Structure formats: C-alpha cells, structure tokens
Length: 292
Image (tube, rainbow, N blue to C red):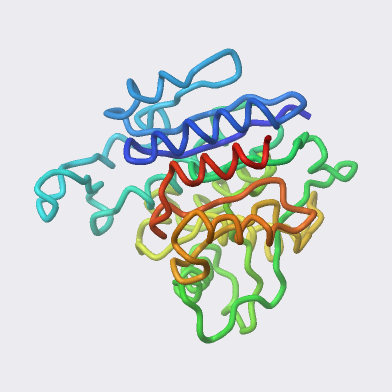
C-alpha cells in the first residue's frame, strides 16, 4: 500500500514544516510520497522543500475558482481571507481542511496520512502498519466529547449532522480529531460523492455553508455512521502526542521536556500547536536531545 502523506500549510508555519520534513525523512519508512498543499502565493516558498518524495500542490489545482484569497483589511493586509459567493469569509485554517479533502480526487495512493505542520516524528514508523489486512486504522476516541469542551467540538458535530444528514448527535460523542491521522483515499472520494448527491451541489459549497466544521469529524462520522465502519478498524490510540493548550505545561524548554516524557508507547511523534507559544528553537533542541 503506497501512502500519501498530506500536509496543508502556509508561510507562517514554513520553518515548522521544514522540521516536519526533516523528521519525516529520518523516521518514516516504507513506500510514501509527501504532498504539501499550499496557497498559490506560498507555493514558491515551499518548493524549497521539494525532493524525490515531496511535492508542492497549489490550492488553485484543488479548489473551485470562485474561492479566492484577498487581504484581510482588519490585519492591515498581513493575513488573508478566502471569499466566495456561497459563504461568509473563511480563514486559512478552514481552507487547509478543504485542501486535504479535495486531494483525494487527484491522487492514486491508497492511504492519505495527514500530518500537520507542527508534527515532528520521533520514532521510526512505516505507514503500511496502519493497515490490518484490508482495513485501515481509524483514530476514534469513544465518548470523549461532552457538554463542556475547550474547543468547538459541539459545533463541529452539529455541522456534520447537517452535512451528512445523520444524527442528531448524542453526548458523550466520539472524537476523531488528531494531528496525525489516516484516511482511505477511496473512502474520502466516497464521502465527497455522498455529500454532492445529498445536496445537489459541489461538496465545497455544502461544507462551507457554516464556518464551524472539522474535516476529521466529517470523515470519521461518515465512516462510522454512513459506511458503518466498512474498511476501517477503530483505535483510541492516537499516533501523535499533542500539546493543545498553553496552560498544559510551562512555556519553556523545561515544559517541553516534561511534555516529551509524557509520550505513550503508541505515539510516534509530537505536535506542539503553534498558537500555544513555544519557541520553535526549543522544539528543535528537544528533538536533537532525543536523537543524541
């Protein structure tokens, strides 16, 4: 099984993405190719990272022409908004999710292994091990979503109810979100086909009717509640040890070392979210310490 490792990124995360690529080239085994999905205005920057197993794909080759980036006037033009006739303005993190979904119609690899820009691989891993015979491992943490969450999980559940015409969801609900997860390419294509058949329109238009969406939630619920788990084997063991919140550990290299010590045996990498404020140099240093 050939694997497409998929990273949607942008210029502000370029150095984090560089570290991801370095760790991937060192730790990832087997038959894989890495796709970097970026906006057209970031493509030249990211082509520095291209190689025999890594390719940059511009958003313009994946998403409809009517979804376009413009300077955000509230940021003095430093940030972008994506505007369309069919939604309120979108942020970059919305469009990164759309790129990942769209890629399935453009590749031949059987597995889509999503790795966020802030992931660093710390243990050797062959993505072929994600397969259990003809079933792909689906990350699912049963009953992990309750009434009080520090994120927008409830809105994302409601969005997937409407998009897939399932539900209504009940709490506690299953969580499918991690920064290192695998999808079947054929199941992702089936998801887009299903959404278009239900709504009678392009899947992007259907997804962006609300800005509160999660591609991981959409895919996971499609697999479990529409496909009834076909072709997948659920597992609660996330592959990435993620630092989601800025108050979880001290915001210095000591806190990062503590975070690293809390890795579980099933974790193959870490993900320090860029918004939690840890210095990238500190992250690189703890990776070097571990490799020493």
